[in-house]
Length: 336
Ligand code: SF4
Image 1: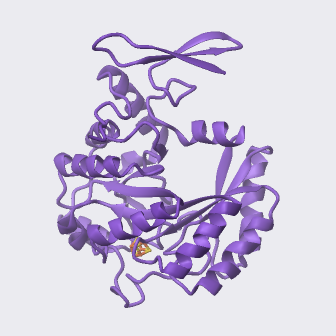
Image 2: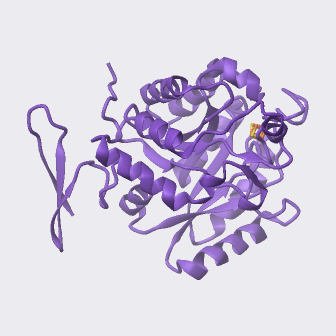
Image 3: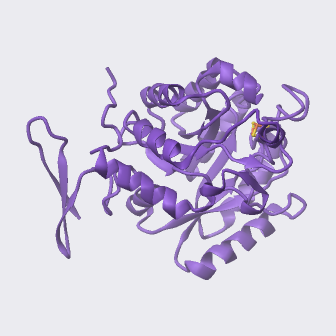
């Protein structure tokens, strides 16, 4: 598909695509469906020529914020390190993966698979343990990519070397949970590491040329829109390969749920979330892939906000506000 661009004075560039159906207009360069942000769908189609779905795996790791190394309670919203869709860690990894692939292929028989080590901190163990758990998934013929979720303070030199080797063998993404650049908020949520520590880990990954995706959360306790935009602005300047934007969910059984019940925490409204997210995208470089733009939690455990259950409505509201405000990813991004 051929892309050509028309630039007018004082207007954003407009991208046209010449395809079999004629000429289509796109306001945003990295889009084939009029999205104004760089979707994972677009990235995967360019990279693999097909849809790729994540197969979540619980590999039985823990987290320094849980086992006592940094803390014992975990982050106030933690319900298993985001492992909402994984199978039990009692099931062998290869069985979990085979099960997840079968579920995906039921609906999308030709899809590629991204083996996603999701639960807890998946580099928090000796490198030999990592090898034992990661290597078998690469033997699956449908696995075209590997994603490893972890914390920036769980990256030893040995582990970085191994990740670098893995990165040379497959499409590897290391996903770092940052959530916010504000250390004051990090203390409130009990994240257990500072922004400075995050930066150290992030730069080590970048030095090794490892694809890195960063997670941020909107609606953290004590944060206003200005603080959320600051997080996006600083992150944009780091030029991550991928970004996941998440809404803070109140999940049953967490400390955040107690705070919510006591009236100490009020979740974001949908309009505030949509507005903040649209503005955040303006500070993110167009090349960064937006791998998630709204929450995706376990609905049966959700206490609030209930509007987040309707993911399609949230995505639609983001698209609509971008059009209404002539907004698009990278609108205000500058590397100066
Ligand atoms: S870093 Fe992740 S796994 Fe660890 S306590 Fe926080 S949310 Fe849970």
